[in-house]
Length: 75
Image 1: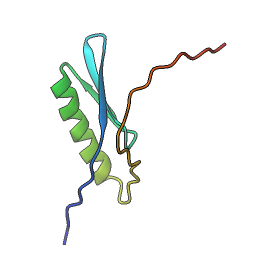
Image 2 (image 1 turned 180 degrees about the horizontal axis):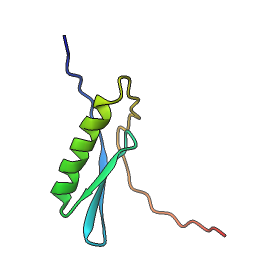
Image 3 (image 1 turned 60 degrees about the vertical axis):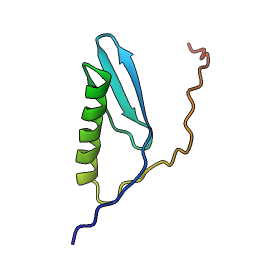
């Protein structure tokens, strides 16, 4: 008997050149597409494949994500 599990995920989407990148913040999975919706659809598919191959996935629970900008100095 296969029971479906449900988990709330948060994703970030941004544009790089001509493409949109979608990244899940709860697991290290990302994808891209020509449009925001396509990137999110592709991310959904990538997450489904990730979960099919991972019997015990670990999710980072993110209640209220916030985008915070900062300046980083490096050599």
